Structure formats: structure tokens, C-alpha cells
Image 1: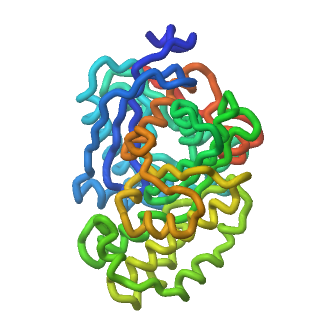
Image 2: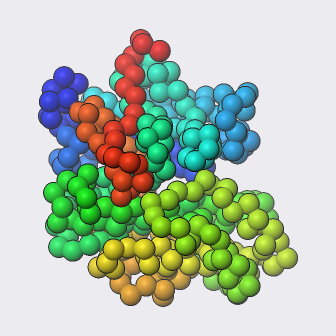
Image 3: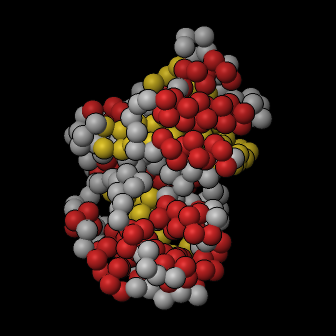
Amino acid sequence: MLKDMRKGQAGRILGTMSGTSLDGVDAAVIETDGEGITSFGPSTFRPYSDEERAILRGALGKWDGPAVIEAGEVVVLATAELASTFDDIALVGFHGQTLAHDPRGRGTHQAGDGALLADLIELPVVWDFRSADVQLGGEGAPLAPFYHHALARRIGAQGPVAFLNLGGVGNLTWVDPGRDRPEEDGALLAFDTGPANAPLNDLMQSRLGQAHDAGGALARRGTVDADVLNQFLEHVFFSRIPPKSLDRDAWPDLQSAVSGLNDADAAATLTACAAASVMRAIEHCPVPPGRVLVSGGGRHNATMMEMISASLDCPVEPIETAGFDGDMIEAQAFAYLAARVLRGLPTSQPGTTGVSACVGGGYISLPGEG
């Protein structure tokens, strides 16, 4: 089957994603040749246990050592458990868990050994998607934009559209669907917008023992601290020309900035920071998008969505309005990218990561080679 897929035949591919929000592993199947999308298959989610989440948190920001090894084992075993629930899979795209991201320094580090995963599930695995891009001068993120291009063309978008993912970190993809291929000049502009759910989730966990602000209910009761918000927007990141990317903990002082606020005001302020990040991001688009389609956990936060909508001049809608599953877009994206890696097609370009030329990243591990 892999031989036929290398020649351009569509295959049934499982993509997996463990995001910066540390909630668990998403897994989704699509049938694709790495260019178009033939069909969407089943999907599922495996939450991390409190113990697993604590192990992952303990490894954030680290590049090596026992904590990193343990975190990699958590991600691989959780992914293997999920993969065993799917049938008739030809290939797996495995993102792993980003522990550290320093593209202008040490590089980028996603915990999880794809060769070990291939042995455990007895399927070929494509993994380490980001390193090649960083080695060639790119940011290594975001990597979903090529998939966003395929989605925009699938819905027959007639003009520029933006895909906004509100995970731990926010990222935006501006798509010109009139370009036939995602690697073409002007087809895509993509970059991280700023912190999204991560600071808010950390606040909820530390203060209230809750994973997130369900529906934005706590933030809705609070008042935004304008001084904290304005200071946040003075960060040099927002004036940098994209492409650009962020580590999950790029704003280490944000928690202390709201430490003197009550729970509701702190939640409202962190939510407003996430929304303002998106507003500043849209200013970098070549032309304003006709609509913004939102995926990731943040789209369930009604307060965050309302704040974003109030700051933009176009519809801001959950991606389900276009017929897609907003919880599984990133997992599907790594299935799509796995097909492209298998075929030797680019997975990033100057407009998405700032890499010097189109590049295809990722390793392919076959069972028994690890």
C-alpha cells in the first residue's frame, strides 16, 4: 500500500496530536493523497490522567534528562493505545508533545519516539515534522497551513479565508484558495498569534483545580484590567512581521501580572489578552479575510469568541459552520502531512514558517527498524 501511496494513490491515514494545552491526544483518520482530501474517517480523544499531565508539565521547557524521557513514554503509550482502536490504517502521522520551542536557539523538541511507536502499533509512522524546517532557518511552526489550504479549496472558498486555531497557543492561517498548490507564492501566510488557552487554563488549574474556564463563564463575570492588557500588547512579538512562532510559555510574567486580581477579573483579563492577540494578528494579513473559521478548544469559550468577534470586521465562526470537526483539525493535519512526507512533497514554505525555501520535513519509521 505504501508503494502505491508514494505514487499518489490516496490512503487511509491516522493523524495524532498532543497539543500545548496538555489535555490529551486527538486521533483522526482521513483518506488523502497529500493534495486533496477524499474523505473523513472516524476520530477519538484520549484525555491524559492527572498523573500523566503532571509528568508532561514537569518536562515543559526541558531538552533532555529523565523528565523528558518519561514525558516521551507518556505520549507514545497514550498514542499507541488510541491507534489500536482504529482499523485499516496504512500510515500514522505522529506529532508528539512539544516540550520546548526555540527556533533561533536550540531548535524545537517534540517528545515521543516515532520508531518506538511504529514497533508498538506495527504500522509505519511519520514523525519529527518540525526539525528539518528549523534546520533550514524556519520557525518550525505552524504546520497545519498546508492542510488549511486543502480545506479552503474543499469548501470552494471564493476569496481569502482565515483559519484560527485556539489551542494553548493561538495560530492563524490566511489562505488564498485561488492558488492551486499550498507551496505557491502568495497561497498562504501563517503564524502564531500569541497565548490563547494556556495562561487561562493554568490560572484555572492553579486557583480552582479546574482544567479550563468552561464556556468562558468565569471570565464573563469579571472585568478586564486595562493596564495588564495594554502592557501585554506592548510585547515586541506583536510588531514582528510574520511568519513567527511562540513557545507555550513565551509570556512567563502573565500569571504574576494578574496575581492581584480576583478569579473572575483574572480570567477576563487573560481571555482579553488572547482575543487582542488575534486582533493584532489580523492586521498582518495581506488583505482582510472574508471569514475566520475557528478550531481548537477556545471556540467553546463563548466569552473569548465574543471578544474576538467584537474586534474584527468579518464573521468569526466555529469551523463546524463549514462542515469540519474543530476538535480534530490538527490531528487530521498531521495525517495529511504524513501523506505529503511519504510522497516527498513540501510541508512548509516561506509564507508559513519563514523557511528559506519550500521544505518537506519528517522521518518515516517502519515497524522493526527501531
